[in-house]
Length: 74
Image 1 (tube, rainbow, N blue to C red):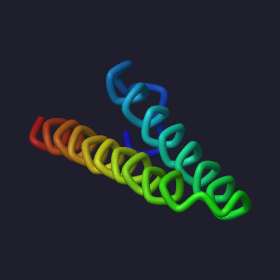
Image 2: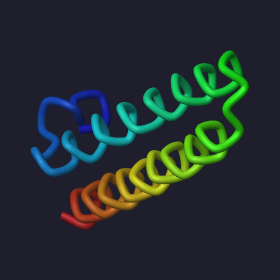
Image 3: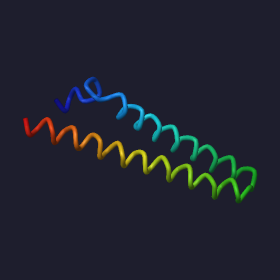
Image 4: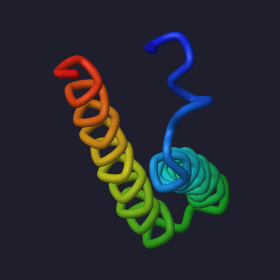
């Protein structure tokens, strides 16, 4: 079961995972752009985007943990 989790994962879990990766990537790019252009506002705003990515990542961990627990109880 654990070796095939991605193949059997729900579409909501996959969406959360890709959303988290995308938000973190966008946040990192915004951080770099903000630093290169010396735009402190953009750099600080990028932290919020990275934070959203981390919250989505945590939600993905919870979704996956619940599914694993349900499968182990069976």
